[in-house]
Image 1 (cartoon, rainbow, N blue to C red):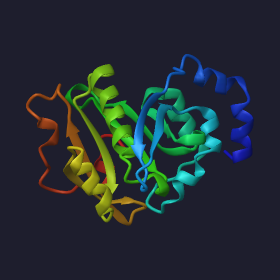
Image 2 (image 1 turned 120 degrees about the horizontal axis):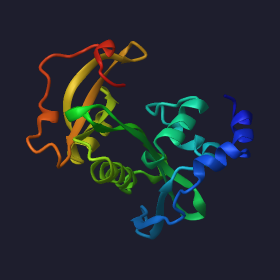
Image 3 (image 1 turned 135 degrees about the vertical axis):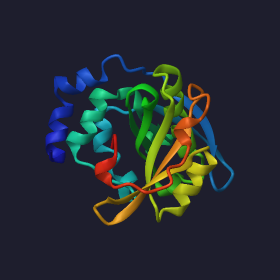
Length: 213
C-alpha cells in the first residue's frame, strides 16, 4: 500500500472503526531534556493518522520498517499493543507495536517493534513503552512471558533489554534477511511462577523452527 493509499484509507470508515472506543485519556509523565528542563510525555494508543507522522522515527538503520498493510493489521487485531509516545507539540517521540499469541504455557506478549527518535533517546521513553506492553500482557491477557527479537550485533539494545529484566533465551540463525542472527529475549511474568519460559536453550535454531514469528 502506498502512502497516498494509506491517507485515503485514514479518511474512510475503516479508520473510524479502528479508532472506535479508543481512550482519549493520555498517560502522561515528565522527562528531563539534556539541558535539565522538564517536558511532558504522553503515551496513548496508536491511531491510523499516526501512520502519516511517524516516518522520522524509523530513520535508524536498525529499525525494521514494514509496509502499510502490516501496521494496519496490528491496529485491527491488537490495538491494545500499539502505542505512541508524544512530546510537546504532539511530536511523535517513539512507538511500540506488539501482539499476544501462543497456547498454554507458551501464551505470551510479543514486542514486534519498539523505537524512539534519536533526539528523544536516553529519556526512558522506550522503558515506559515496554513497561506498558508488559503490563497489558500480564494484567489483561494473563500471559506467561513477553518476548522479542533483536539483532545479535545491536549491543546497545541488548543491554537496554537486559536492564529491563530480559534474558537471552535462544539464538535464531540468519533471522534477519537470511544474513544476521537474532537473539530471542524473554522476560517471565508473574503467571510463570517457576520461570520455565526463560530457561535458555543450549543450541541455536533456524527461522523455520520458530513456533511463532
